[in-house]
Length: 151
Image (cartoon, helix red, strand yellow):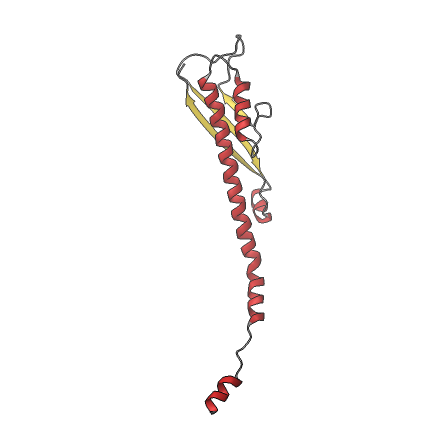
C-alpha cells in the first residue's frame, strides 16, 4: 500500500515552459529556412519562364525566317514568359543575335546554316531579408537559347 501511495502522490513534472522557450528560440531560424526555400523556388520558376521565353522567340525566328522580323520573335517570347517575367526587345531584356537584316523588305536573316542566339534577362527580388542582404536586394537571372538555322 505504501508503494501505491508514492506512485499517486508524485505528480509528473510540468515541462511546458521549457518547450515554449525552446520553440521561441528555434522559430526565427525555421522561418528563415522556410522563406529561403520559397525564394529559391520562386527564382527557379522565374528562370524556367525565362528559358521558355528565349526558346519560343528562337523557335519562331528559326521556323519563319523570311516572313517575320525580330519584333515577332520578341512578341512570342514575351507571351511565353508572362505572367512571371516581362521581356521585350525594346527594354533590352530580350536580345536576338544576330539581328535580322532590316535593309531589305521584308526583313530577313542572312541565308546559311548559322546559329541564332536569344538572350533573356530578368530581375528577381527575394522576399527574405537575409537573402536580400547577401545579394544586394536583387538578382539578375539570365537564360540563353541557341538554335541552328536551316535556311
